[in-house]
Image (cartoon, rainbow, N blue to C red; front, side):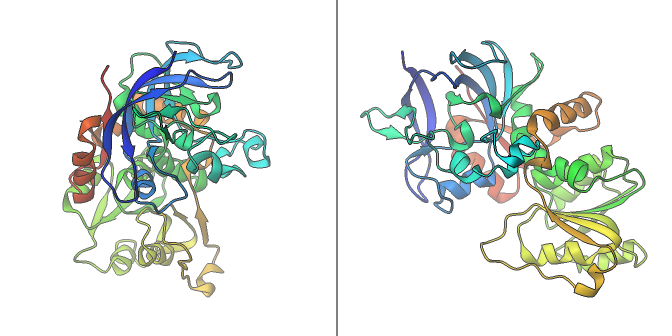
Length: 370
């Protein structure tokens, strides 16, 4: 029996989301039906809605879902109805990188996460006129009350935790925190600079504090974000609207530079700065998504001093391992993600988008009510 679904539908590039009633197929043998409680709003969702990604329309987006398992297909193991879950990316599970525990670098990442359909080309949603609506975006399409997912994209979480707070762990927060914990491997006593204080950058900052970094320099153009960064562990803040950020970081470090830097803006000049402020043997993690064909610039001679530059997505570790790590830190009060989240009803998705764009909300989470 198909499930009635309330969803935010993107029907064309650049169009506003429409709240619609759809019908969702029963789960196939390898699928799980999830009742979503919440879904984080991520820049990637907006890029797909704008037509900048290889995602067809009409489509239900959303890739930071959290909810409860309602039904499982006959071939599914490890999950049962009633399980609380956070959803992350989809992956094939069989390629070299998946087998190495790095599903974010799956050989089939683009079709599985952006093409918004099953491997056989089918979709699970129909609109009121019986026309297909694309789903399976990142294996979940969580801007909806219900969706179909695969077990490899689900992570069980303890019952009773506030799922609206946990939803951003599916992408944005693990991207920032995982870069610090796994890509850079920040150690106690380190100096870290974080460029860009959105949800990704602030997650990186909190992870740096949890790792024992003794100096954390936060850089942004938004004074409220800089104040929040100070509350979350930044030891110094730099307002990029009034300071030359390269000179400011070097001045704060006595001309040495930082051991690690994290860039989360997607702006090439900021990426260049994140590399330029590295100390010898320092490492920079580039997390922001730049325009296609954009070129990063670095001083080749300075790189000879043991400096490294790395890209990192989705935390550089399987979400099934990284999400529980961050939950443990959260339970200890060392990863206070609740300070980043503002909730909105799904029907207020346009207001959430506007608030994020204006910089008044760090991480918008859309909530669903039965």
